[in-house]
Image (cartoon, rainbow, N blue to C red; front, side, top):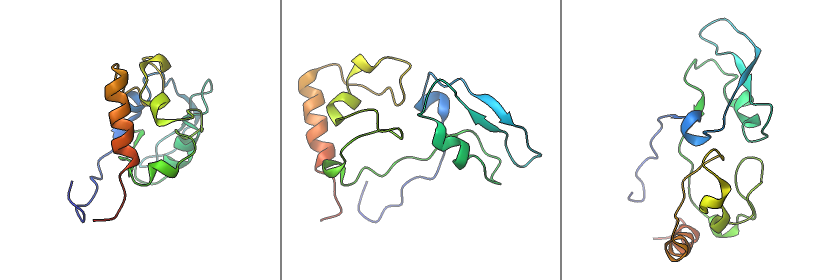
Amino acid sequence: MDQGTPVPTFIVPMATIFPGDAPETLAPRQPPLTPVLNTAASFFDDKMAIVNASIRGDIRGATLPLLLDLARKPVFLHDNSVPTLDNLLDPARGATAPHPFYLTDPAQRGQMVAFLQGLDTDN
């Protein structure tokens, strides 16, 4: 993506972002408001109860993240449960973990970590 190109604004469904998501309704609401939902077994979706507590009435999910300045980010995911980018991209986290997008080859994973840590706003 070129500098100055807007980040797409579509919503990625929670089932894609977090296959282990199993939300329960905390509070129903009248449309266009969506119900307040929570997956009690995980801290990962706690932010979603706030984000989805809006008037947009859209699907449960999130927009694409900005991948800038990751070299200075000390931990990953909404609940800070993943300590490094290498851990984030490691399939050992499991198929139902939040953001289960992995590289099985350690060398490729290392290359991706280096690439992601190099993203910034400089030309």
